[in-house]
Image (tube, rainbow, N blue to C red; front, side, top):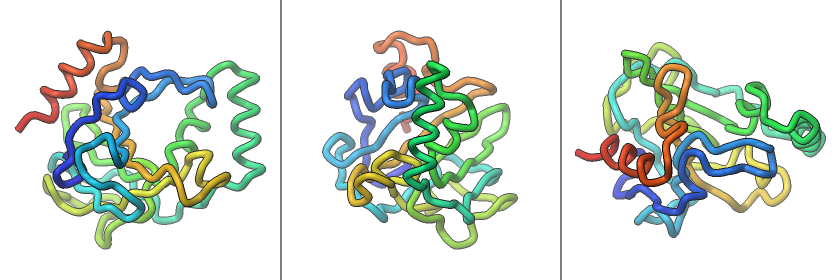
Length: 181
């Protein structure tokens, strides 16, 4: 688990394939929120690597969303009817990505900060501290900055995300297998 003692949430809106109407898209990961993940989660909660690998992205230079940028992103997604790759990346906020080989990459998103030593090219071990929970990239970062603290974890398999195109039951079973010891 990316957060010590956490469990997988079972609320459909926190899992892959859930609609994201505010940005005209779908959710591509698992959201670990306080009250839904078996442990207390707040700003600064430690985030740990779920598997050993090499850091391929660490957003040390993250720039917070401005109100103008948020409004422009939301307007663009509304006019397009979908969230383009650039907007989706911005909505993920501060991120750390770890490449585990064989096309498997985990993305840790909405981070408040990154742990010392976590930089592109660094090797990390399963369970190693890599970052801290935040709300970066979310509309709340701009509109209500003291809310919505959570970890968004994506498991990327090639060009898709784990669970893409699966029914809810199939996706939950797949996630349970992925996170079983």
